[in-house]
Structure formats: structure tokens, C-alpha cells
Amino acid sequence: MPLVYTELRRLAKAHMARERPDHTLQSTALVHEAYLRLVDITQVRWEDRAHFFAMCAQMMRRILVDKARERRSLKRGSDLPPLQLDEALLLSPERAPDLIRLDDALSALEQFDPRKSRVVELRFFSGLSVEETATVLRISPDTVMRDWKLAKSWLLRELAGKS
Image (cartoon, rainbow, N blue to C red; front, side, top):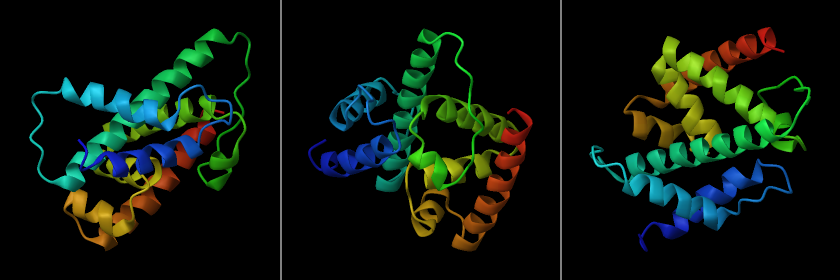
């Protein structure tokens, strides 16, 4: 754990930077929560360092989505603003509903095309570069870019239909 803790904190800070300013979860707590959840996973065969960090990023995404769902369930009568899959999402003051809608759309994409869903997850939620994503998924950087563009278009169309 000490060998990867710094990198996990960087990853958690990147996730938390996209959250609303008054979020009660801090990056350190996010790292610890992700670690506790990963410790319980016994059937994963860690292939390499990139695979480990991809799994950590996925776990952090799930934790933040769970917190957003919990927060939304506490609010009554809240109208959900339309979601844009671009930098506006990172600047939105009310991120919980957007994150939930994006997660739902990403889950739908996963049913349709799992690899494109993983590309979005690794690029958007994990902040991995094209090359890092290609390494984790064992595909070429050109394929990552093609999948990234198609997935964004698919998600935008999906989200537009749900607004």
C-alpha cells in the first residue's frame, strides 16, 4: 500500500475536483474507502500496476456515485438539470444528479459495448491518458480515440433523450 498510496491520492484528488465544493467526502477518505472495498475482492487477478489503478479508479467512481444517489434520495422535488458530457460537467456546482445520470448512461453503454464504456470510464473518471488507457485495455491508442469519440456521441444522444 505505501508504494501506491501517493498515486491513489492523486487519483482521488482528480475525482474530488469534479465534485461539488461542499462535498463531505475528502480525497483521503475516498482512497481509504476504495481500499477497504478492494480488500474484500478475492477473485481479482491483478495483471499489472495499470490494472490495479484502473480498478481503484472504478471503485472510486462507484463510491462517488453511491454518495450522489444517497444525497439525491435525501432531497425531495429536485429537478435534474440537463447534462452535457464536456468540461461544463466539471464546473457544475450541482454535480450529484449529473454524475448519476452519466453513470446510468454509462451502464447502458456497457450493455451495448463494454469496451467503449471502459474507455470512457478510464479517460473521464480515472483521468488516464490515451496511451495509458490503451495499455490498460491492451488496444492501440488509435482504437482508444475511435472508441472515445463514438462513446461520447452515443452518451450525448442517450443523455439528450433522458433530459
